[in-house]
Image 1: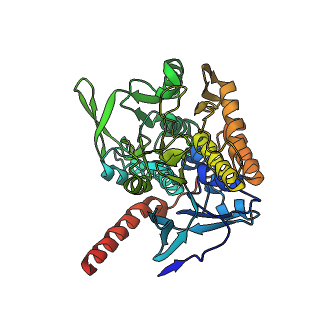
Image 2: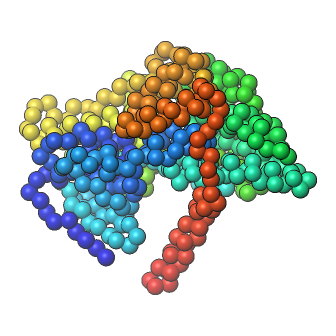
Length: 460
């Protein structure tokens, strides 16, 4: 079934994606005489940096993923449509989206593509079945089920006298901020929150192993903070394996190969993938129609004003772009601030064009507000330019910044209360409820997709 949106005399801006780039672009155009249509494959705006806290039972999904309609309900010039964008026709200036077989074609005058990035398994997509990434609420809830479920199954197996070492071994692949935060929280979960909850296992003896092909932890933070994070993680019981690549991964464990040729097998029931990202497939769609180049991560090369060559009406922002920062000669990082600033920039440029103001399409300038990552309770690392900090003050700064970027007063209040409960008053975690549906849904959906493809193939 196909539905087309009727033409409108007002300038139509279509925004793909409800992440930081899409949301901030939409909000920047509030109160203007432009018609804004946001198309997103999920009904919520996800604060992705806190997904690991959902996965480890500190926060609920609602606190970091309020519904987009709730956020934008007062913005009368904005319409929100649920749908997975399947194609963009640059010549016709239309976007086609689909949800449960309902196909909608939406015309645009200006397009902002902020579809973000997904997990990259570096060509080994079959790893996803046994090592979920950390890119969506579904991922976080599945991981919560796997992590807490591992302890439950270990208790059951131990009660029957079976060996439970693999059930109590957690492997986190990727020693960037997400991997470091996840490994640190699983270690704290085992050694504090669950330490006295079981009768047949000693949860605090669970192994948490952090693996990366790089020679240090947190490479973007530099060697000094990397060493501090390394020592802090080891102090909390995390085993760190560096300069090792994952060569295979299945339900039973992980195979590693070191740079010197050595190999190692780790038996583990629970694996978490926090290594690498791949830009949305829409980058390829845009590349094929505009000739803009793609890099190895699928990011599309944009002009200094975030538009595509020959198409000033198409902006691309956030994790999808490949743009060199003139200050350091490196591509802009795939972080929230790049998306936020890019979304605002695109919106302001569109508005300036409509108002006929001078000085249009000035190059986008990214202001680096720094990077931070938590290691454990009361301990974090922070880097702003050449300034570096670690420890308690960095942790307080981390709390303040993340609280500021949570959407909605209610979410800030409830998140603060959960943080007080989990970090200050004790070690309790309010979100420990898990279901088997969370754990098994990924495989069920994958089987459904495969069956659907098989039926489509037979019909064609």
